[in-house]
Length: 283
Image (cartoon, rainbow, N blue to C red):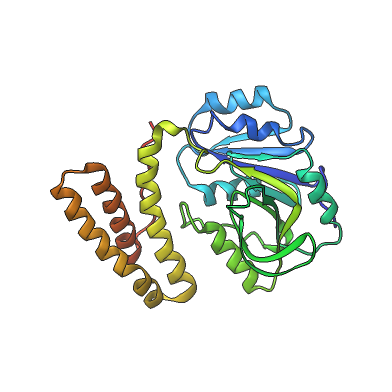
């Protein structure tokens, strides 16, 4: 089987992404189906996308469900065998998908991705082996992933994870089943990085990132390596965060104090088996 324009759907999850999303969509071949999952109730945003772009379907979730849950909705609404997960702050090159189509012929894979065009920030971890252009890897970053839906049995992203490590969790489950994950070096993609949400929410995003990074690390380690491993790895950083909270309280640095509060709270909530409930204020 080979990926083509006809059997591929691009899924993009957005929230407050109006400043960046059009560049991403414009870099995708107009003939390829696109599904936008907007994690809000912003009807004006999705209506504007539908008037600007072809072959696009847009859905509102009504609330901020996170990347994993949003991507799952898009995957399930797609009617093609292959789905490409993209972040809204990515840009494809003119030949990104053409090269992917060529390499995919008779290639057995669960996940396939272009290579980041920034050599300083590779979008993969732990190379198993490689030929000249195809790299067999352990995991890839979630901002660009082509999934062969037939290899997943509808078990895609873990919806308990709001953000961070949902891609590592998916990749680890794929590798544990003996399936393949590849990066194709001749196919390149640009990732702007942390630009998916309007920059005016930068402080709220920092609080959210610090909370969810610590929640997700504990949850991921507990899920795959056990509770003791998760606790040993996270507890010293939790104690350090408590000390930092006290320090920044004394010197009256409210921003830094909240950063470390979010780190401690994320760990503590995961430790207590609480859901990843924290949401940034994006009003």
